[in-house]
Length: 159
Image (cartoon, rainbow, N blue to C red; front, side):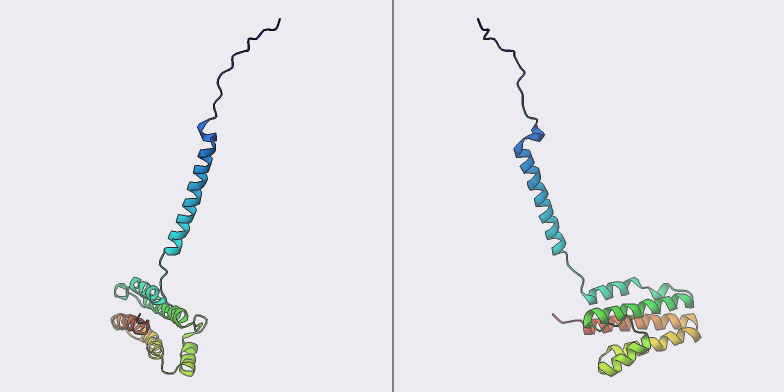
């Protein structure tokens, strides 16, 4: 005679982290996070050339400089900001040019552009650094910074 009794086994249940719905939920959350991150990065406002230049200019504080070497660095940064602005705004590839080359190029290619007068003024003022005292340099540096800010505000689009 055959015994119809079977061994009793414990009831087996799949752990919650192995359930199919949890895998779908995690995959959906990852996909949603990726799309949200992509959207936020794409939506992030890109700085215009004039906003970038004005931001860099606001970080320069010639009022706090004390020696001629600091003013030399100031004028180096000032011309670099102006060249980067003109390069980004008009696409003129000015970063590789020296100041004199840039003025000659502007006089030849764009004789009526307002950058010519500002660049000439800055080159003359770099010579002033060598011979003037610090107080004269400080007031001139503040004027040059303001001249570049005025130039950027004058040349940025009106829209």
